[in-house]
Amino acid sequence: MAIRVLIVDDEEPVRRLLSKELKRKGYETDTAEDGSAALHKIRKTNYDIVLLDIVMPGLDGLALMKKVKADPASPAIIVLTGRATVDTAVEAMKNGAYDYLTKPYKLEELVIIINRAYEQRRLSIENTLLQQELSRKERPDKFIGKSQHYSQLLMMINKIAPTDSTVLILGESGTGKELVANHIWKKSKRNKNPFIALNCSTFSETLMESELFGHEKGAFTNAYKVKHGLVEAASEGTLFLDEIGEMPIGLQAKLLRFLDDGEFRRVGGNKMMNADVRVIAATNKNLQEAIEKNQFREDLYYRLNVINLEIPPLRERREDIVPLSEYFLNKYTRKFMKSVKGFDKNAVVKF
Image (cartoon, rainbow, N blue to C red; front, side, top):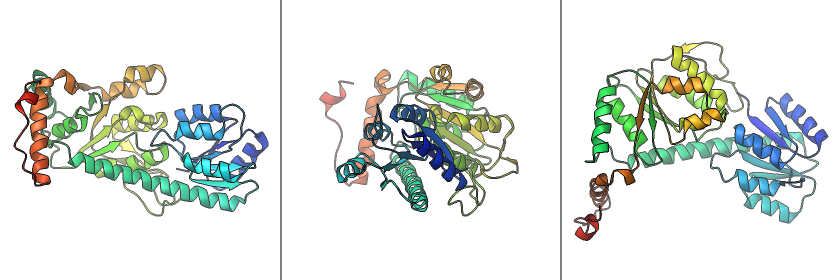
């Protein structure tokens, strides 16, 4: 799949010419005439790169950058302007721009910068995934609790784990949705095969499709060899799609087809492939509201929601606070070789 580039400039001839030239180089392009239009498009579409003019009517380039870069999965921004000063260049870089070019510029120079920005963004996303994986290892590797909510959840997991149905796990951030998914896998007949997790909020649509379904050699810039996606890696096992509500709408249709018949196609490929994978999804979003806003497919929702598990937050199961606290205390006293015997009784009785 081609690198997605959004061109933001208030001069229509500039947008048209640059879009034409980049398409000839193999990029997928879109345009916006000002910052407000660009922000609207960025919120709806997962771009890899934004080429941004600084001085525009309404929401200018610097103001747009501040809004866009607040999202850790935001596209890389390259500033292009004819009104260049040292101050604006410094300000742009402070606000998260990858690089800065002054008009007129050579197309070849811009292409090099776009490819570098894309590669840096890809590596940044991979680093985020690594940090998430390290974070996962710090979480409890087993269920801990004594509340009624905990007992009911454990009973449901034991009941649904032996089935092969898709499961949708709902709950706020930090409630342990991945831990639940992992426990379902451990209790299932697929537990001798992989459990693979993918956070859908981490990737642009371009990178997520490649990560999920793989790509063929030459499918897009820097695709130097065939890549097997997580669907193939999880064959005969379980694939956990965390933050499913953040999956780009265009990719949702491909996931739906895979859930229906187990078929998929690598990015840049023509051959239909098959994989036998159990899918467990999770979200902290209200998917019904997302459906009403056309941000999530209703048919995909019903396909995922065959079995529904809702995890209450810790504030609604206070009986679990002390057991969890003791677990982490014991874990980290061993890890850091500290001698901490326990919590003060006056603190414990508050829970």
